Image 1 (tube, rainbow, N blue to C red):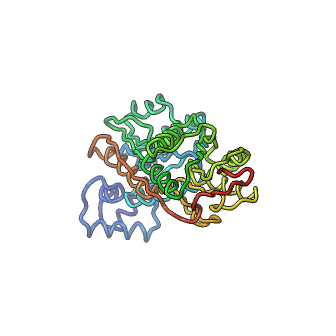
Image 2: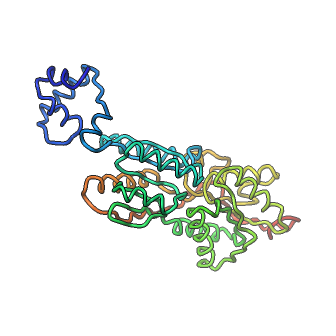
Image 3: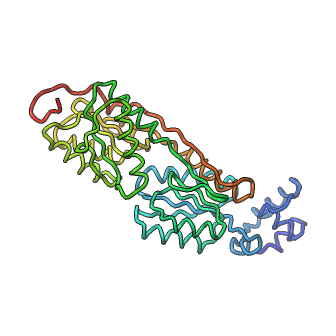
Length: 340
């Protein structure tokens, strides 16, 4: 089956069929519908490579994420792809696994596929790699890490606002000795969240205790290992904030393993609000980063620039606090190993 047969069956020219498929020029709705019905009846699948050669556009966007095993990212991918499909775009997903070397491979893959734009939803990004896209005129959108340019946008998540809400909530429950488990500190995202925690504690007039700030790996095992160390302290914290939900879930596991209770002995707060956080035992209080809004902003930024409608800009996303059952009044017990 080829485009000539579709045109013959629909009683239009091959140029009209091409316009309907690619959306490159206006076609009357009546004619367009007849062409679409013919395509469906004949089970015709357009040659995407040929379309790329003809239009100069691949109708594909790249989406680079950090960790496909972290539920935050599949939710983001789904939302991004849903919007892309509505606009007749395909999506190529690449996973860095938090590694710069993998990031270089992801960039090369996007260039080989001649994508029309790239959403870089990760912080494993060297400046020279971003330059590769800009030198080729490929629109890009970053998450918290990019510089604004003619064809580059940046999405800023208000982690500080979300973390302030979490600290204020814990303080209202009587917590003053609050620990923080960060992500790998070589990542910009981890640095941003750690800085937000430190600044938030200072703004609330609470002590920032360096020994209560440990480094995790954004995964459950890192959260479990860091929480185990916190539990071994002579004065352990009464509350802990994880840099993401997987870290917090790992911390809850360590607390349970030590024979302690959440939140009666230690309160736990996560960050991201992945779907799983509503089903932990107990359900996790967490800072919500809206994936649907993040995906919408990322796609909008790419689509607007690639269509020539506007230059790059900054998009801001607010965070909110979701209260569940993993936080409670600070423990005041004075038995050995207790915080106060």
